[in-house]
Image 1 (cartoon, helix red, strand yellow):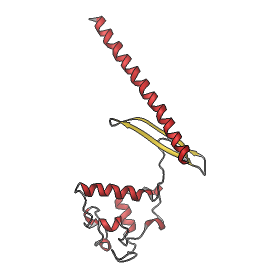
Image 2 (cartoon, helix red, strand yellow):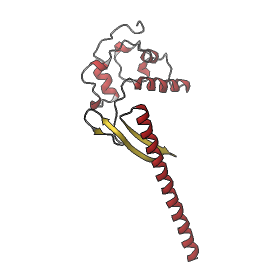
Image 3 (cartoon, helix red, strand yellow):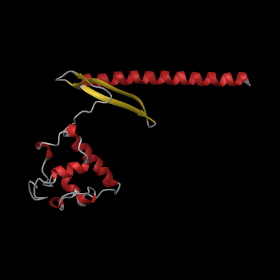
Image 4 (spheres, one colour):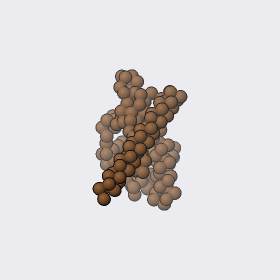
Length: 170
């Protein structure tokens, strides 16, 4: 029985070492792939996570988080992505529309509590097509990324600003 127990431990140990070597080899392939794409596409920095079966098997920063200041990227670097988020958000909303979880012609107050009365005619479609009339926050102070405003605080800070035009007219 003791020999069978030792044999079982040996097999488990070998499987564990094999798993570690496999993950290590994959990590090197990830590094090579990411670095090659960064060179190919002139990308200064990236934060990458490789997830397999719901578990992070690799998380790493590559290159620079700030070219101007020479700050290296880490696995925890948060990059400002600017207007790219508009397309990602629109695609995500359309997936919710496909799943009948969001209606494009529904008032946003259904999905966003505490919206001001001036936004009462604004629909999801108006937001997606930039025809809501809601003031663009990007030119206002108090909305800087480092403030990390929660949704309710964001709405509360934007609410006092009048619509730039009547909803749906431009």
